[in-house]
Image (cartoon, rainbow over all chains, first blue to last red; front, side, top):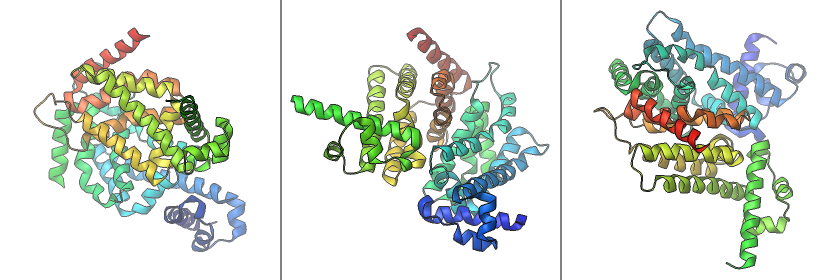
Length: 201
Length: 209
């Protein structure tokens, strides 16, 4: 199977999941869209579940890569977080149905698929660690502050996707940025970053 | 209440617990009425006497979890002012989660991402009310945080709970008291005060044993 065919298969499989739900989702359309045979499909994935897990893993890498590409520049940490978050929100707004499949339909299949969603969130944790250097207090911040920040952003993003308002997310960058930065920098400095981001929009 | 009513109430509770346990093990989508009645050790007629269908039963279990959370929050909050009220409320919610992990999973994971639209609505209403309660915390500095901040700070704490529940590490939830208190307070009272209050919460838990 060519890489392009694989990419098409993953994409259409997740779109099928978003459109029809797990039980009704069929592999027929995605197989046709990818231009492969049922034998090739079965040899590679076994069944619908195998393909869905592979598709989710592939799209997870794409999402994380997209969001973190802006985090590797030479800018200060808050700017890098702003850039990464902005890239993520733009990507979600551009493909709301795929975002819905990634956040609700796939995790909602069963506990094992939900664990993959938890793993996806944990992929963002390492990019938060540098935020500890921006703390306004001398004391050590709580041990899980990185996941607190990721979870704060996820709560807003998930709520908007779930409500069918994913297209609003890029405009919400400043307030989501505030919620990500506030555990590390406190409300005053996170507020400054929020206003700076709002002015840039 | 007659003896028959009492028996019926106990039976209903047993079915709700079985529902929560089945969801924790297999997820709502993979749970059947047959699995619930077998686990609760009741007959199908008994199930039908209390619930219309599986979703109705799941909603019953979810509402039980939510109402116990509200009862705990109002009981420990009564007669206390902030910050002591919030500290006691964080402790009481963590105690509920660790003592009833299956119901906690139903409330925090199943109803949010795995359940039906009615279960999602119940989850959204509960978190909305919690966020409104949190917004009543007076900000330490002049500026109020953005409108979505209360929901986000609860989301941070929930992310920890969901990670531990999904990994079956329920014992770890009780170790995150400092994180929970810090997450929900820092946007409102600032880092130094949130750290101070989160230490008080952790110390209170240690004293309670």
